[in-house]
Length: 103
Image 1: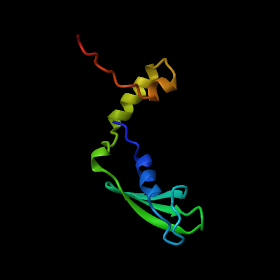
Image 2: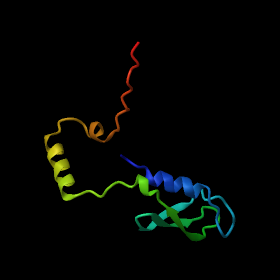
Image 3: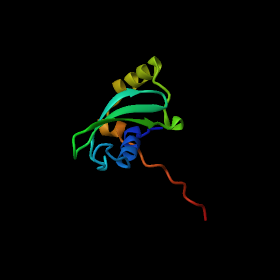
Image 4: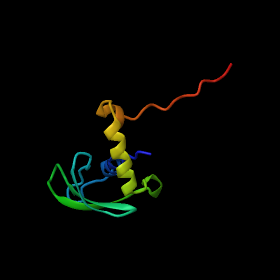
């Protein structure tokens, strides 16, 4: 299951205000400081006053994927070695198949 954790961070930050000038941080600069299993620590640079601040953004533990193993990497390597399509065919998510109702 692919998780857009960066999107979740940005959604959280968009609701925050600069502690110095009170501007919304929707268009602030964001730089990761550290990642923990359940939270990310980021540095925010206000685009209005330029003040830097630090935020802790909690991550939903249910959304975290298991770490890749060596076997996962080797399996991906073997798959890609035999692949004859485009890169976008591999990385673009396919729409979920909808089951048609029987009449």
